[in-house]
Amino acid sequence: MKKLFSFATIASLLVLLAGCGSSGNQAAPAPAPAPSASTEPAKQQSLLDKIKAEGKIKIGTEGTYAPFTFHDQSGKLTGFDVEVVTEIAKRLGVEPEFLETQWDAMFAGLDAERFDVIANEVSIRPDRQEKYDFSDPYIVSSAVLVVHKENNTVKDFKDIKGLKAAQTLTSNLTDIARKNGAEIVGVEGFNQAIDLLASKRVDVTINDGLSVLDLLKQKPNTPIKIVAKDPNGSKNGFMFRKGNPELVEAFNKALDDMKKDGTYLKISEKWFGADVSK
Image (cartoon, rainbow, N blue to C red; front, side, top):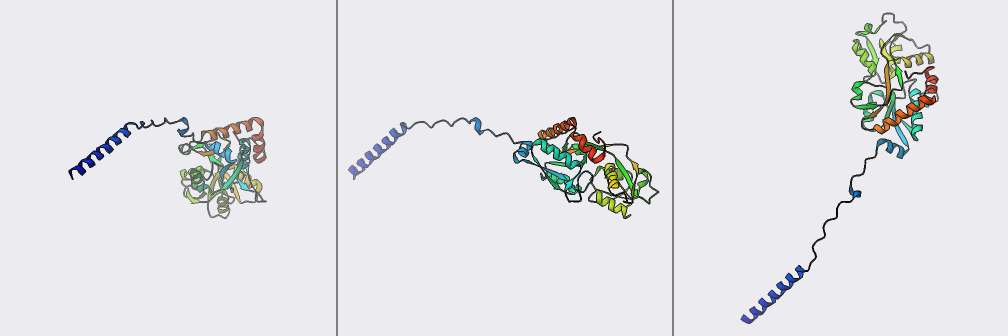
């Protein structure tokens, strides 16, 4: 038994020594390779680059606000804003895709990235500029006070206190109505406001002067009239989500080029008979 134990002990020692010798011959692990430049985060694609890559720009608009954005007798979407933004899209080398939405849902649609830009006579206001970016102004308009043709008591904005005013709830025109004490009756857009006024279901509406003049030119028998004009003109621009300066700059350049080469004036005179950029 002692001999067997000695042989087993010697065998174990030989195995142990062999293992130690082999471990000494192993190469040290290679150092981890340094990160290459290709592993660094790629620069995020701008919205302008994305639009150009896709070949189209998504445009939010009402489609019910003549003469800026509406459907003609054939059902085609047209209007001043539609023509201006279509020309801008052409100069960017992309196709315009119009997505029609009620005014009060339009800003939410831009927030949700349903649109790349809004083209709908959006007034440039400080409260909006806190959240959104705007192009340079492309049209200046004034608010007007409109009543039924038979109404001879309302002659100025101060006369609308306590009266029902048909207004879209988030419009700057509605702010004027509230400021003068009117009771706001919410509507989806310009056409509904005029329909309520013409049928005497409201007393007044404060709306865009260019829109009202266009309506009376197209439908002179509409029983409404303008009784007062707000002295402060409203500057309107195309509206974008914050953080897309390349797209805003591209719009501004296209607008500037259109004014220089006479394209803007041609569109303006077609719809209003004058330059409405000032």
